[in-house]
Length: 462
Ligand code: XIL
Image (cartoon, rainbow, N blue to C red; front, side, top):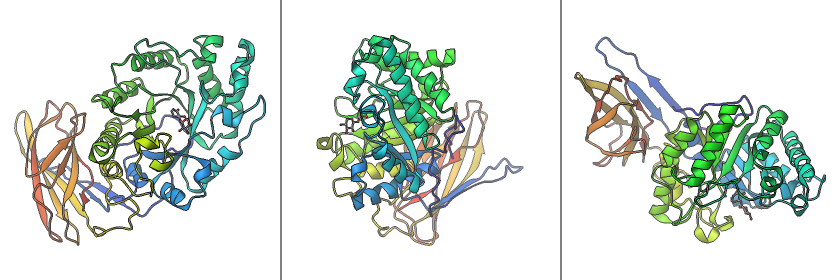
C-alpha cells in the first residue's frame, strides 16, 4: 500500500471511520529458491472514501452549508467522501464581513457535519484577493498588515484541532506568460513579502496544521505560472519559510485539459519536500472522455507518494459552480457517472455509486506472485488470479515495479500503464472465471540493477 507521508502531527487527514470493507495483504517469505510471493485479497472497496483510504489517501468534496438539509446530497456526501472543504463559508467575506465582526455560524455547520461523520476538514481560504470584503480593499499598509494577521489568527484559532490543512494563500500569481504576482491589494500595499508573512503567522497560530499554497493553472509543468509558483515554494523551503503543501485546484475544461505531464508536475513539487493535494477538481465534459481524464488525475496522485488526497469541487453537477459543464462525479439525480467509476476503479475499488450492490456483490478474487525465471539482466514473473466463491465476469489488478525496473513484455492479459510507467494495470482479456477458478498472466522485468519483487495491488472482480 502506498502511503502519503504525514508531514505534521496534526489532525489525521484520512477519515477515521471504519467501514466494512477489509483489505489484507500478505507478503510471503523469500524462499531458498528465490521465490517471492505477495498475495493481496480484497473485498474491493465500494466508495471513494474507502478506496482512497486503502491507498493512504483522502477523498473530499466541497460542501455548501445550505445543501446539507437535502437528504440525497447529504447521503451521497456521507457515503462517498471522508474530507470536506467549505465551498464558500470559510472565505474572508463570509467569516469577517465587517472589520472585527467574525461570523462563524455557517462555516461551523459544515465543520460540525464533518466532525459528526469523522471526516477531515480542509480550511479554504485565509488570504485571497477574491470574495474579500470591501473594507479590506480600502485599508492602508499598516492597517492591512494588522488585518491580515488578525484574520489568520482569529480564524485558525477558531478551527484549531479541526482543520488539518489550510489554504493559507490562494491564487497569488497571474495567469499568462509573465510568471508575475497577481496585482492584489495585498501585493500592492505589502509588497512581495506578504505571502511569507501570511505563512509565518499561520505557523505561529497552529503549529500542527498543514499549511498550503493553493492555485489554478499550475498543472502543466512548463507553464510560466507553474514555474513561478515552483520557484516561490523552492525559495520558501530553502529559507525555512513555513510551507507544508501545495494545492492544485485542477479546474479542467477543453481549453485547459489535464496535461500529459501532470504526474511530473506533482512529483517535481513533491521533490521539494512538500505534500501535494488536488484541492478543487472538476473536469468539464461527460461520458468516457470525462471518465478518462478523471482516471488520469487520480492515477497521477497515486503515482506520487506525497499526494495525500483529492477533493472534488462539489457533490453533484446540479450545484456545481460551473453546472453547465457537468464537471463532477454525480449527476443532478445523484447517479454515479462514468467519471465516478473511473476514479473508484483507479483507486482499486469497484461497484460503488450507492447502487445497493448490483449483481456483482459477491464477486471477489485474489492474486499471488512468483518469480518463474531469472537471467543476468531480467526476470519473469507470474501472477495467479483466483476467483472466490462466486463466478466473476472479469478481473483486474496492478503490478508496480520499482524504478529503474521496466516491464519489457507481458502475456495472457490486457495491460495498461500509468503515466509514470511503473504501475501496470492488468485486466482479463478472455472473460471471467468460474467460482474457485484460476488463471495467470506473466511479464518480463528488466531489472536495471534492482531485483526487488514487484508489488501487487488487490484484485478487483466484477
Ligand atoms: C467558487 C465557488 O465554487 C462559487 O460558489 C463562488 O461563487 C466563487 O468561488 N477557486 C477557488 C474557489 O479557490 O474558492 C472558487 O470557488 C473556485 C475557484
